[in-house]
Length: 285
Image 1 (cartoon, rainbow, N blue to C red):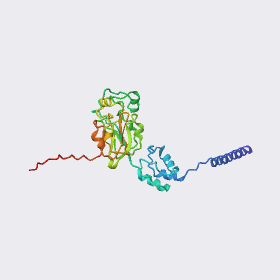
Image 2 (image 1 turned 30 degrees about the vertical axis):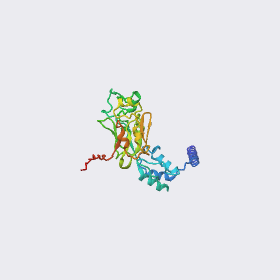
Image 3 (image 1 turned 90 degrees about the horizontal axis):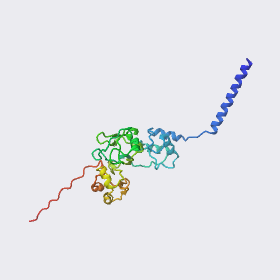
Image 4 (image 1 turned 90 degrees about the vertical axis):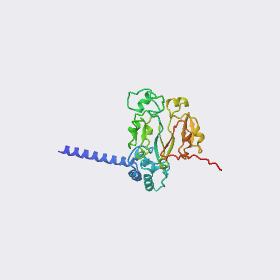
């Protein structure tokens, strides 16, 4: 009986000593977490989409608390409302950021970009892109296999069954950037949503020379520079036979749209242009 009692006492003593050691070690290596991180995380939408550039809402909350200002920090899902709450918690000024949206820079529909062969493999743009250039003569265009659709956490992008191209639902898109990262052809871009959702952009990423690009797709950019010369705001540049419109400089005048010979420049959500009435000359008696 004494042996059992001694064993119990020894085990109890060892347990107590171990508990003390663990407590001291925990205190020694305890990591302090600013309570504001939890407060900021609570007002975030918990989408964990990574569109802010950080690993989830927790990482974004930590970045906001540690940063000296909120400039350059934006939750694309929550937008200005959420960033206003974050600023209130941290006692800082909320920096206004222009709303962004995903834009598909390819207009190579079945009509504009005829198929030359049929792909019979895994239903994945990444796989198809790794194997060959694509079903058409344009090796830069969209495969239409829906990698962007699969990764979108907001059901904001779908493949049009007629055109075989992805289309963005403006009411659902939060500009999280998931589709941008998933596209192996780099045809999806985040651009400013624009006033009244009006945007002008070059819907092409083909970098081949003009004749080759035009042969592959009827609405391909041919790098003719007409749009660049017509732009009064120097918002258009030509690089690698391809025009690009800087949305920070573009004033939506649409002069580039009128001069583009291949209709590669898209204008979205604009009202129809007014037709100019012909001037009738009258002869004086």
